[in-house]
Length: 269
Image (cartoon, rainbow, N blue to C red; front, top):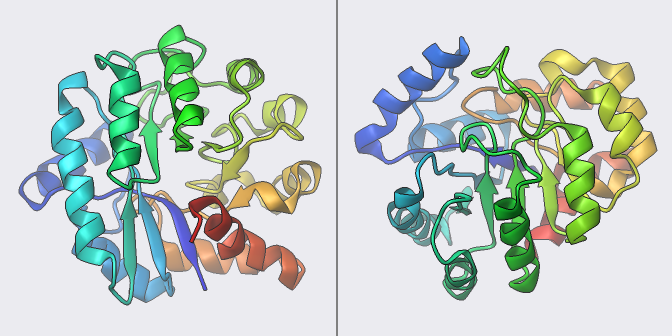
C-alpha cells in the first residue's frame, strides 16, 4: 500500500491557469495538469492508493469555496479504487477561526493546510497559535509548509525550524505535520531543533535535494513512527519519489510505516 500525504489539486475551471502561475513563480515543472483526474493518473503510474489534497487559502474569503471543493472531492472518491482525501484550508485572518474549525470537524474533514509564506504571516503569530489550539480542540490534523518555498527565495522564511519548535512547545498538539521533512532546505536546523518533538515530518519535495545520508540521519534521530511519505505532486512525481525512497534500502518495517502505516494511523483509517 502507498499513501501520498501531501498533494495539490484545483477545480477544473482554474487548474490550468493556477498551475501555470505557480510553475512560473517557482521555476518548477508540474507533473500533472493540476486536476483531480491528473492526480489519479499520477497515482496509477506510481502505485499510490490514497492521496491527501492540501488546499491553501491565499485570502480569507476563499474559505467557503475551498471547503465546498474539498467536500465534493471527498464525496467523489470515498469509494473509489484510488482515493483522494481532501483537507480544508485555513487562513490566519479568517473570522471566527474556532467556529470554522468546528464546522470542518462536523463535516467530517480530517484536517487543514496552512502556508505561512503564501499567507504572509510567521508561524509563531498568535493567529496561527489560535488555529493550532482550535485544531487540537477539534482533533484535526494540521499540515503546514515548513522551510524555504521555491517561490519565495530571498524573502524571509516564515516557518523556519526555530519558530516551528517554539509553536509546537506552546500548543502541544500531537497531530501537526511539518511539510518538506520539517523544513525545506533547512534540514540541519531540523536536526538541531525539531527531532524528538511530538510532530510529524512529511517527505514532500524532499528527495530531489536532501540526499540519502541526511535523510537517514533525520529519520533515525526523529523515529520511524513520525515520518509520512509525500511528494507535493504535481511538483514531484509519485513513481520517482517512491523509487528513490525504496532505493535507500531501509528495513521493511520502516518502509511500511513511512509509506502507509503512519498515515493510516494519523488519518484514523
